[in-house]
Image (tube, rainbow, N blue to C red):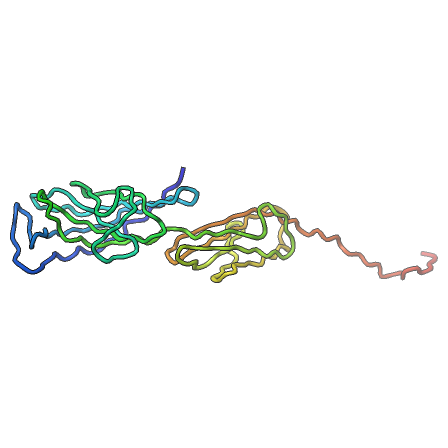
Length: 257
């Protein structure tokens, strides 16, 4: 089963200012109306962001919550979303519930599923009344892209036997950009490389023979992390000792003790 990554509710912004366009405001069925647009103050926040970890089908979800409207004729809320742009109106597509706007009915929370983790998303909420008059957008919130870099240790191979000085190399790619690749031995950081080719020179000469876990961890500017791991066996010192007989000399003739 895939694990869930849960982000705290840190994407909280101040409420949007009410819309005052040209013309006079009036009240209709308890709703403030301005030239056919309902005025609505709300606080939209992200409760959690859920992403499937590598190994599962890539998808992301976001749980949204907003302050309720107190208007007597409130009928429901629309959730608007859009990838990689905060330019209004939001015309997002691809979510499991369909294109923007998504009707959340008369609730103050909703989960938007099926988002592409390679994209950053912007969200806003509007309220509507029984006449389907709709408010202006609430505050806008954003979640960053959550696609992890793809990293692979290319040398040595998994289960290889190594000794002496070993060159560990890795490749890494990302939908935006790789920020760095870090090399670990048995979960201890050994080296950081910020430019390809990603290399680490490992001196095994002083290590005890046995199995060691080598991992490469690539991160991008959004903090997303990809990982590759192998296990290698350090063979230890396989060279026999050298013995030199200094006396007597070769082919010497000797007698006595």
